[in-house]
Length: 150
Image (cartoon, rainbow, N blue to C red; front, top):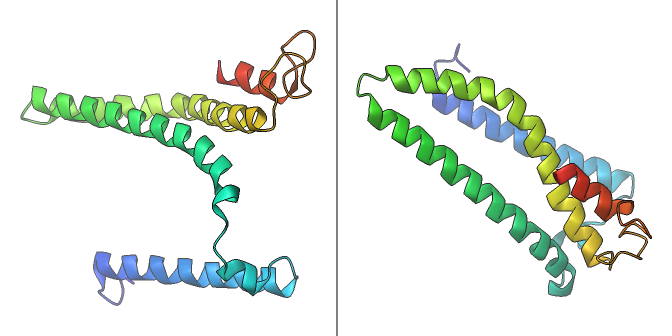
């Protein structure tokens, strides 16, 4: 790309082309192994099938929006403190170090935010259900997700 002097635009075109190729190859393999039917791929899902995904996804989307707003706000305020950019550079370095630890924490939170709604959708919200954790209330998928999210 850079040898052809296409620059950043060439890199963008190459990235898009490689992703389209990889996606096409993946679909072709799924079709060949009969794990996917072309008719099923082109048919939109029913709304009743999407509602559980939308309920669980809305909570995760709201959480991610709140995190993004907080990080953008902190970065903007740091840039406003020092017009030379030294404070912003220091903040950026600190933010990178912080990111190493926060990735694990956010992964655990995302797993909890995914497991809890799915367990509740299956009826595991009570203490006595299989997903709710039995008599102690701390086992099962819901209990594990809640402990992981904490």
